[in-house]
Length: 113
Length: 109
Image 1 (cartoon, helix red, strand yellow):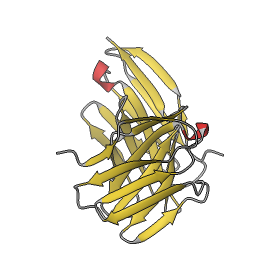
Image 2 (cartoon, one colour):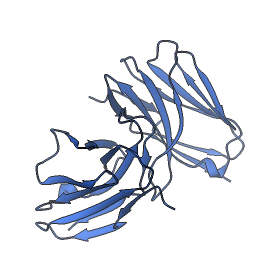
Image 3 (spheres, rainbow over the protein chains, first blue to last red):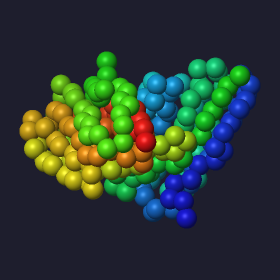
Image 4 (cartoon, rainbow over the protein chains, first blue to last red):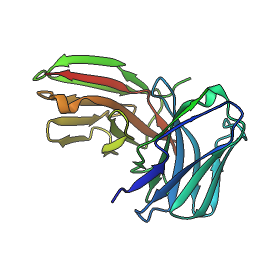
């Protein structure tokens, strides 16, 4: 069974559209994250969610909104997509909530045309 | 300003050679992690080092944490094509996890 799974794997869409990426972890971890990896492979934290506490990275546009229906799921909704949003988005989870031992999903490659 | 500098950015060597990649900062780390990322996949944790001067071995991979906890190195002995990937370091600095930009390693058969 995949520990951290995210869907879709690839997402191609037009500018201005709204899209969602789903993430589920079956590891029983308390903390989940969304990361953005740009074309230079630099990983940037977007959000972390520890139980009911959402920690927002202030550099992330408010067009991005994470939603966590329960501890095992953290979805990412993006409104009014822009060309610069094209990147690979990774979901991750960790057991302690202190950024230790991150377990990553396989990524969603988002292409905005 | 990037807090973690990884070098080299790119390294391509022949199978069987040895190599070392580096992760450096001017800040002191609480701990440091090394991950390997293969194309189309997410990063996978290789090791966590916590104590200054600590050395950990994972088969042919040797990880060292600097005495001052500001730098780390990854040495691979007798590299194999399966070692190909993007090697990322991530350091805990002031309760945040900071990532380097990675070293892209290609091992040619």
